[in-house]
Amino acid sequence: MYYEPGRMDHGLRHDPFKSLVVPRPIGWISTLGRDGVANLAPYSFFNAVSTNPHVVMFCPGARRSPDPHKDSRRNAEETGEFVVNIVTEALREQMNLTSAEFAPGVDEMARAGLKPLPSRRVKAPRVAGSPIHFECVYLQTVVLPSDDPVTAAAIVLGQVVGIHIDEAVMTDGMIDMSKFRPIARLGGMDYTVVDNVFTMNRPDPSA
Ligand SMILES: Cc1cc2nc3c(=O)[nH]c(=O)nc-3n(C[C@H](O)[C@H](O)[C@H](O)COP(=O)(O)O)c2cc1C
Image (cartoon, rainbow, N blue to C red):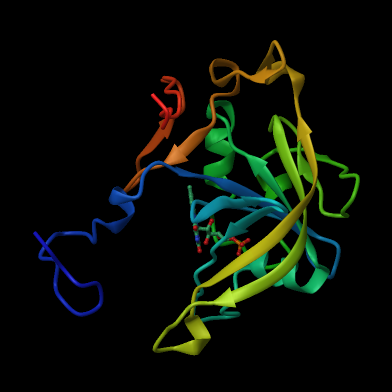
């Protein structure tokens, strides 16, 4: 089959796009509002995009009301910082709870029974229990093309200025996926756990 998004009906019950780019890592974004209230929400349009410098991005959609911008985007833009917490299998239920569209000013971390940990380089808190945290300084927002500029999705870019790694997920100085067990998003309401690893060396062009 072939379809052109936005121009042709794919004829399926759901747009398969999100089932096709899988698995998508989940950036669990913690921020502080201007009022100092902590905010936490998962984003699977999330990835690392560079190591020179270390840059990550997440991509909030928008809603029509009351404020079209999701809290994570607004807080990152207003305070100039955010933290990415990586979601493990053990934290999956809490992660899901924090995706509820609470009103701004509601501390999702507290609602999900999670404890904040102080960060070193930014004021936004880290999520206790997550073994990996990236402290990020906001770089820029790239607003994506849309017929409706109010509800346009956007890419929020941040430079990673501090990385925390819980040594409990390491073996012999390497990140051990069997201890880390990060989860990632598939299509529909499905997720996967990174628990099946294989190794391939790069081809040797002189061979
Ligand atoms: C696993 C998961 C991944 C999600 N990924 C995204 C995403 O990439 N972009 C988005 O706009 N919303 C995404 N959502 C929905 C947001 O988490 C939800 O709208 C949340 O209320 C936004 O919170 P905020 O306004 O505090 O930023 C996702 C939800 C879940 C459960």
